[in-house]
Amino acid sequence: MDAIIATRLSYIAETYQLLPATHKGGRKLRSTEHALHYIIDRIYDAWNKGGGMVASLLLLDVSGAFDNISHRRLLHNLRKRRVDEKTVRWIASFLGERQTEFSIDGFQSEPYKLTTGEPQGSPLSPILYLFYNADLLDRCSQDENTAATGFIDDVAILAWANTTEETCTLLQAALREAEDWASSHASVFAPDRFQLTHFTRATSRIDTSTPLQTRWGVIKPKPTCKYLGVTMDSKLRWRQHIDEMERKVSKTIAALSCLGNSAWEVRTKEMRTIYRGVAMPQMMYACSAWSNAGWPDNGYTQKTLRKVQSLQGRAARVMSGAYKATSLRALDVEMHLLPIEQQIWKHNIEALDRIGAPPMRPTRQAQRRRTKTSPREAIQKTIHDREVNNWTQEQIDPFVAPPWWQGPQTYIEETAEKARKKHLDLLRQGKAAIHIYTDGSGINGQIGAAAVSPTIQQTRSSFMGTENVSTVYAGELQGISLALDIAQQDRVEGYRRSKVIIYTDNQAAIRSSARPKGTKLAD
Image (tube, rainbow, N blue to C red; front, side, top):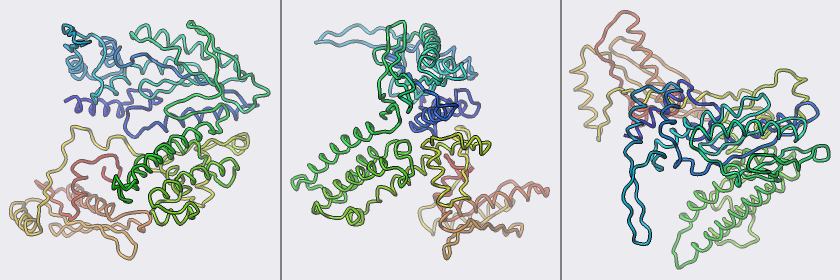
């Protein structure tokens, strides 16, 4: 039941924009890369303003974030952000009457009632915490030179100005707002785990040693900080992150080498699956930020590319048992691995597709002032340079339909004989219905869709493009859409039929029509 409420709460939060847009975690179609690029884009924007501003990042840490949630304050925040009363009351009941007990060295305490916290592991916990600390992000972003973003309980505050003294003043004001929020929400910050970093490439002009004065003491800036698993250095050169990633992947490859021992009897195919499922995500994590997309334009990036290529080469030798001098290209081919530069390009395209392209600059003069290019802009520029001028993005909604929406009644028979029998039954029983047959197909590299209704002698067809831009599955869905167009036109012309019965031979398309998820095509 809590999973159902979590889905419904997420739906109303996204549909009616009940949460700050800067809350990136625990939400559909958002990831850590959204939060990272939100920060990185604003750092580059600051660097491109005037003579080059400095951006200071403060990472907050809340002790026992989920365990210290005040139930009364959470319910108040839900009502404040316009969640319906029935849902709020259900959540109050869900959080109430919770008990716990301690067992230490054989001693068992009596059960006692919990008035704070929420059950970790419940699908409802992340979305509830977003509502709980949403005010924190709003209050820390009040100044026009300050921005706050959150990934569930990880909150980052970024301030930009001409000097680090000014940015620290802005961060102090934001931190006071954060303290007020904490006092009213029964939350406790852990200042010993705060991180402060001044981002600038003009180290001779800007003092990067300016500390932040707080009521807990002085927070000294560090040349690097770790945010959402990514090590960010003050110049955004990413050397430290690459080194850390290399160490992590090397350990994975060493473990893979142990599995390759004959005693374990792990086959090459299984080792490749482990490599792609463990080592590859470790390498590719947030590469849309650190790869900068334009490999040929930066010497250090070429060095980084060689490092990552070397990691894949080592893994391929472990999996295949090849000699050390074997060509990396040959190893990629033999082990059916996508070359690293292509893997990074693929990841960057997918990341830009999820996050969205950077905003267009209004004038050429404004564009010329941008002497430093953010990773997102670099990816976009590479796409343009490759002459993909007609590349457009489709807006994907988090929810295609409300969670409570009931889809059409569907029938998928086990055999062709049963399907033919069901078809005849529907024809006999549905004489007052409109019957429409659809299909999607690919012929000679061309994808098309069609719908035919013998009931009213109507047809529709659509060309979906080549197989490079479309699929047969998309054609099947388009065929169903054309069928609905025929039914709608029939209704506009004044016919009031009791049913619309659509026949198609693609089971995946039938299931998608009944329970659409995350795609405009199935809307």
